[in-house]
Amino acid sequence: MSKINLLAIILISTLLSACGFHTPNNIASLNASITGNTSGAFAVELKKHFNTNAVQLLTVQIGNEVQKQQTVTYSAGIVSSYSLTLGVPIKIFQHKKLLLVKTLTANTTMSKLSLQANRLQITTSYTQLRKDIVTKLLRRLKALNAN
Image 1 (spheres, rainbow, N blue to C red):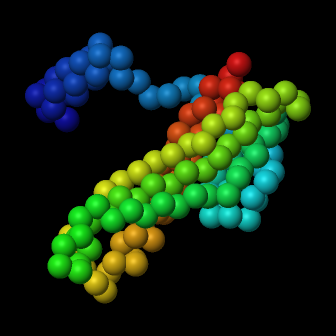
Image 2 (cartoon, rainbow, N blue to C red):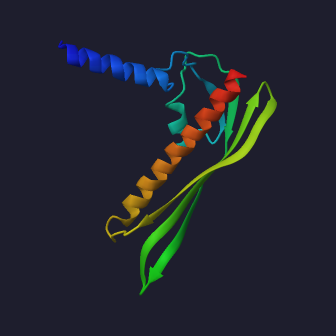
């Protein structure tokens, strides 16, 4: 390794360390029991992120997904954009004590839809919105689990 490469690596490492960047070293494993709508797409996506070997301290009650599709731009009989919203009602318990009641939502606007790809794009967008809500829920579960 040349001296310039070594110097560049040391400089970059120092700059990243100085700005607070670091690899996470205390990743807590997370597991919770899921009740309610356990066979829905949201519950299936959420279960992918749980560690089945960890202790289940929290219970997550999942309600039915609410998908809203609203036409935003409509001209000459052709829909050119949609506003999609996905909401999932969540209740989080710890030893029968209610910690959180909230409907987690995510939304997006899609434009320039072709007629053939219309349904596929909408389905894909709802899948991405579901993943966004799972990420929000995991952050809340980790915070509640830490306390």
